[in-house]
Length: 289
Image 1: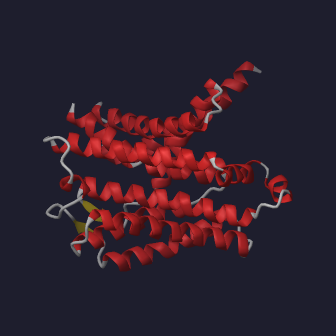
Image 2: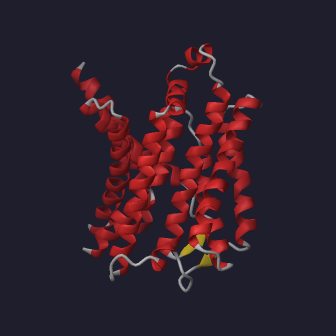
């Protein structure tokens, strides 16, 4: 039971990441690879500040700002320098590797003996359950804030920028500003995911972000498949399904390990699983035609 509770908890850690990927890839149609760097950035800032005995409550806004700056930088390179969004993300991600290593001072920082968000707040006695409930409250709060934002005039302008950039520009909306704000928000959420992960796992590693975009993308694709299948138009329900996708994705990997698959093959399993999710709707269309 603890094994699956830990898996669901890990899924909650990745929920903010999944929401960030949803904003960049599904609202703005931008394949943002900055994710790999901003996720590690969130973990690096958290680890560095924890080792300097800073409160997790002070670290939280610092992580959000750091991730937001990384995303805004990608947005500026893309919109102002007219560089392809994918390349802009790769450039910022590459630069962030050196930034993260400089922040951390070394490649790995253990945090097992340091106070964290999950040790300062005691909801229940069991540590695993305590982490789960605290993460659940944070995820619900984040989802509510993002859902509320997307319902405001600013959020509607962001969504319209992704749907029809030329139309919303004709209405006087600065689409460059929308893209920069959207990428800043997406990477702030990604960095927040790193903040949660580092404190729940008690370590930060310079390579923790490698391939993390696949985790977020897999979560979003699971949600998108359900959204299309059920023909959901509600923003709130779409966000909830994205969160559910993050948990389901981790449960699939957990079951894979539980049935005895070599952990060294986990990345291949991840890639194949995402490929299957992407391919199934297309295979169904081919079969029906």
